[in-house]
Image 1: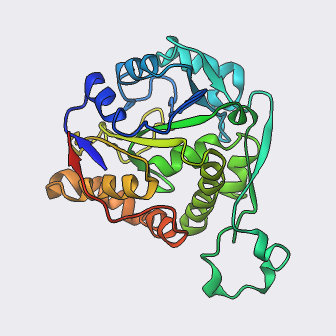
Image 2 (image 1 turned 90 degrees about the vertical axis):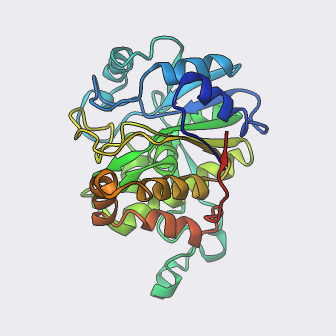
Length: 296
C-alpha cells in the first residue's frame, strides 16, 4: 500500500507508477464526475495529467438512477463539460445499453437460495447472481479506479468499492439491482455493492488497480451538488492493487485525525453502518485488511 501526503498532479503520477504493473491494453479510468458545479469535487488538474500519461486510456462513467442531469446521456455529457471533462473522450458506458456479469461463486448453490440459513448470509451471490453493467465496459482490457474518498448519505463512505460497484452498474438496471427497490440503505445495500464489485473484478482479473484521493472530505457524496463543507483536513493519496486494503486504510487515516477533524465524517460512517463494507469484503475474501503503508 503506497501513500503520499502530497496531493498534486505530480504525486499522483508517482504513486500510480507503483501500482500499474498489470495495467495494459485499452484502459478505462473510472471516476465519479459529480453533479454540475459540485461543491467538493476534486480539482480537474488532478486527473488531467494522469489520463494523458496513460496511453490508450478513456475516462468512463455510467448514467445514474436518481433524478437529475446525469440520468440521461445527453444531459450527462453537458454535466461532464461543465465540470471540466472536456480534455479527453468520456465513455458513458451504458449509453447503448447494458450486459450482465455473473457474480462468481454462486454456481454451487444456484437454485437453492431459499434453503440457506442466516449463518450463510456471507456466501458469495447471496443477494446477486449477476449485475448489469454498462455495455461498453467489456471494450476495455484494464480498469484504473480513481476515487475521491468522502462520505456518503447511504453507504457512510464512498471509496473504491462504491466507485467500481455502483459506478460501473448501468443506470436503469444495475444500480437498481444494487440499491434495491425503494432505495433502502443499510447492510443489504452494502453487501450488494460488494457482490457487484466481485463480478467486475472477476472480469478484469489482475488488470485492475485503485487510487483513493483523500481531499475535500465532506460527509456527502459528489452526487449531491450542494454537499456539506468539509470539516476534515486533506490527508493525501493512497494507491494499491487491493480494494479491501485501500478502503480500510482510507478509513483508518481518517480515524487517526484529531477529534475535531474526524468527528463529522466518522459520525457519518458509523451512523450509516458504513464499516459493514469492510466487513463484507473481508468475509468474501476480496483482499487483505492487514496492510503496510509505504510512504513515497
